Image (cartoon, rainbow, N blue to C red):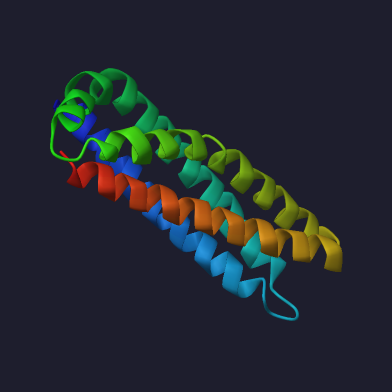
Length: 148
């Protein structure tokens, strides 16, 4: 693995973990009766940026290295399910996450301007769904990494 690919992989992991943590913060703060939507909007946009960064860096790593060097080792190893199920699921689920978090950031910006109880409840649900998807994606990455 080249230093560039190692840096991209590390960036992918760190950006993803921080973004997932931000989704946790959003989920908890949206439970408040009167949340600070200025704060939440900033957190939402930062989480969206970090998920897009994580997505872009992982895409480059996956296209240039994973498919050629890592995937064959996993499939020939003791735990081929590491790729067959978990990586395949992660790939498809992770495609939705940056767009869902972007939608959440837009909703939080709208709530910042005009509070709306229905939109707040929708944002709560979306934040929680994104948190679950992000946590699953991170866990799948750990399982895949452990199967090499």
